[in-house]
Length: 314
Figure 1 (cartoon, helix red, strand yellow):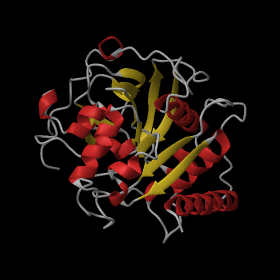
Figure 2 (cartoon, one colour):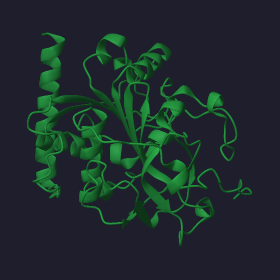
Figure 3 (cartoon, helix red, strand yellow):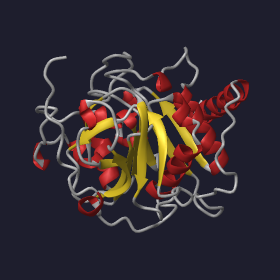
């Protein structure tokens, strides 16, 4: 059996599992059926959804045996409805130059140093695989990251200090921001700063959502900030800081990079606003939709680099 046939059968099985499980669980996707951001005449894109947990394993990506996790099912179903193919894997050995040629974009919901087997014990990415992956993005492939994608391949140094650009891990240089810590889950306000970005057209000036919010640092100066973390009224020392980027887009060489801190909670993955932003981001990251994404970090979050002081031992 050829590799292409194996991949096709695997995607077919995953797609059927997604439809069955989501119907059984009553998780009908609420995304506006008129939303077709990928376009009828756009190329059908292939997304590699990588959910390996070398660090903490989130419940949204935890599998029951060989069945897809909650987030994997949601993204696969979104692909079925909106014209892109998803291959979900926790196997880091797929990151070889030859395999990566078959994908238009990479989507990470990961933690830790992915070159280590770590928590979930799945095969790690090799150092050569990491290099090939980053070079692929720089050469024109897309990247999307949700939530703990910023808690992956940390830079060396104190978590509560900003690292110089050349001291950041190459992955973090690509992503454009890095996780510090998070507090208790709570409702928070997301302020929209890029109403023209795909998937954001129907969002008002802001919206509220309950999630586990990341405090972030090491922002690239060229970020096009889409959603801002409104820290006013948030509880916990991690959020006692000025507003900072929570969702953004940037260019990395010829590639397009998108990140959102949203996505910890399983109900966020069924939230129509979150889904709309994801589908729009996939359309943009894969080049099916073109919009201007000029840097706006300094204008919409001028004090983003002000991070909370390191807390005393708790």
